[in-house]
Image (cartoon, rainbow, N blue to C red):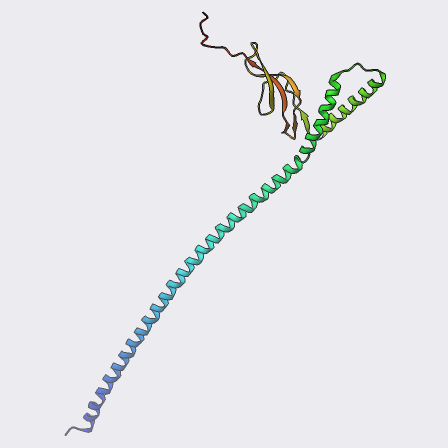
Amino acid sequence: MPSEKNKLKISYVPEEKEDYNRNDSKLEIKKIKTNLTTNKLQEKLKKQEKLFKKVLKERDELKDKYLRNLAEIDNFRKRMNKEKENYHKYILSEFLINLLEIFDNLERALNSQPNLNNNEKSIFSGITMIHKQLIEFLKKHNTVEMKVLGKPFDPNFHQALSKEERHDIKEPIVVKVYQKGFIYNDKLLRPSLVKVAVPVKIDKNPKEKL
């Protein structure tokens, strides 16, 4: 029969094996849990990276939109300031055009040069004074008469009412002014109404006379 000592040894061996298997299983479970946790963290990290990229894209789009809106606002402000400046610069345009009709009538009266008696001469002198005052008023408001007589014809500033052919010129020339034109703050207020002399057209292929 086996001794008590041997019995104890035999009964202890399976207990050691059982503990070893249990510890091994625990390690395996721990590894699985660790792997699961790592996978979840990786998935969560990927989602966060995707979300971060989306946020960056939205930020860039908003920034671009903001800069474009800022540029549009700045352009609008500049355009409004320019329109405001032009409004104040040319605010008298309509008034001055109407005033020039009075100027034309005064000039016609002065150019008529009638035979006047003493009383009429004093009236004529008063008209001359008013005419000079009107010219000074126009100059004060940057309204200047265009000197066009004898100058080359320019359709941007002159309006031709009649013309004549001449042999002594090579380009159209203003030879008579029916109504004076004016510039207001470097802008055409009213064109000059003129008569234009043009070069005589030479027929390069004249018909043979019979």
